[in-house]
Image (tube, rainbow, N blue to C red; front, side, top):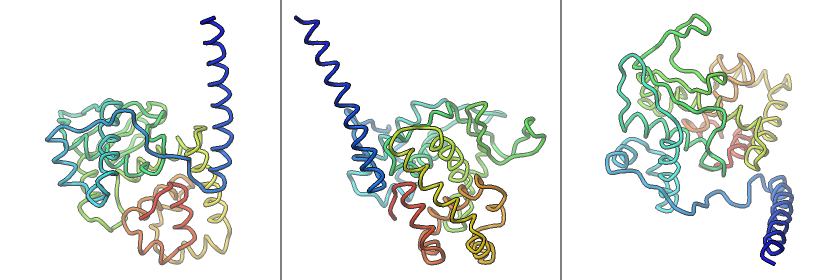
Length: 265
């Protein structure tokens, strides 16, 4: 009897999951967002020193409502717990390093339900610019899919937040690459929406008249036009660092980025 009950419960749960998945997929197509974003059986918190860093050094967090601050802190704590932080060249990984790097990632993915990446498992931090043997060049930061690593020069990571509206933020830029690949290869609702909106952005940018206007505007730095990956990373930098000007200059593109990230300023 118990076996039959368990079998029935399993079939019912599977049926519910399938129906829910289909309905949410349709919902995502219509409204460009999943049914829900935040649901955590237990909410994690940061310790006193980590919380101090978050409150004192991350403006995005301070602009959130009290409820969303709890969600943001939970995601930061989970990120720090999930990914290994590796120091190079005698650099010391401090609470500041972990909290600010994690917060940058959480900021980009705060409108997405699945905010933990499957294409990285480590964060590597150098004190300053480092030499990469992969392409025989010096780097400030990079996303290395084969190593499943995101790498930063801490000096340059911090510099990205010193001027808040220059649209040059190493942390945002490199995490945008991670999110881009994650969004293209995952099948959860948020990733599907991300991928669909990215395709729309790419097609609009490839249209000759639109591309010419983008380049002639000088709003996005020329590096953005290196390839599709760099373009997306650069426009996400602009989306977070100068959103009002971005919306004023290119309202349709701004709207599509907002939908892609399920984020509103």
